[in-house]
Length: 82
Image 1 (spheres, rainbow, N blue to C red):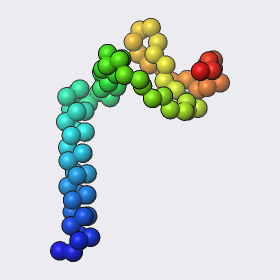
Image 2: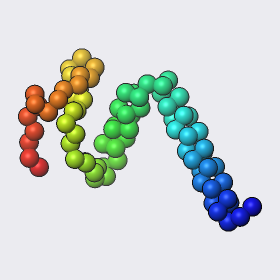
Image 3: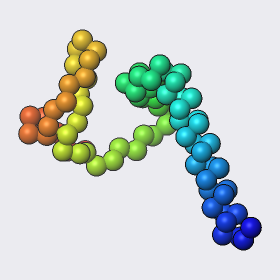
């Protein structure tokens, strides 16, 4: 096995492990990505650490009072400048 093949094999095993971990995390929330992201946001909030906020996309998902989410596009949303 050449050095390049060894690196490719190591990379493949790392990627496979990442997929296994991702699947286990998603499975722990019953496959519900909304529950997974809500949990992640709650843990971020409790951590007290600064949270990086990337550039806003042209479409966002807003939380509505009944706990469900609704997609909106930027034309109907008022944004405040930081």
